[in-house]
Length: 226
Image: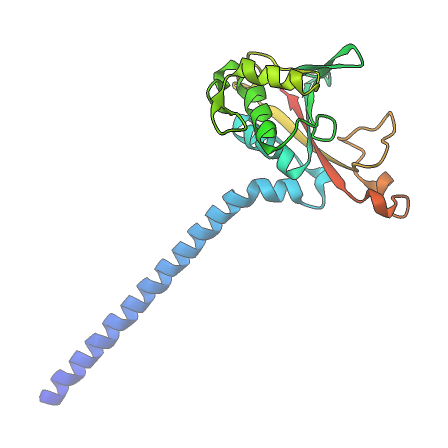
């Protein structure tokens, strides 16, 4: 009788162990699924932007995607261009070059060498938010300054850049949807006049035509307002 009782206890213990093992495996499986989902969402922008087959990448995005992309533009050296849906440029700011005022629809470190990292960060902040960036722009000594002071600093640097007091976040991005497209070129190459960053990806600049000194590949992200 005692042996039977012990056998029942052992059977019960085995049953509990098997149930616990099954629950544990199920929990690990759910955790793995959740982790994969989070990683997928976290990496979605990176995968989309840096996939090799960028010529086929297009999607519709809003301010939540475009603003971080603008912040990364100087750090990662790519050009961002804005258009209306019909392909006409959307003015972001103006620039005086050789005495001529130009309307600028792009953000491009190669053309607008603002200065050091602090000034680049200030430029992005002021471009996005205009006078709402007051107190969020930094001086070289670490203190803060207003939009008008930063604009004067740009003029002192002979950049020729004139920013709008209303930032592009409120005037262009806030309530809009954009079609996002990609293109690539080697930034040291002289681009042909009919170059279209949305369609002329990188084939015409591939080896052997591209010399070794011109290997800095530059990405262009174009946004078409819908």
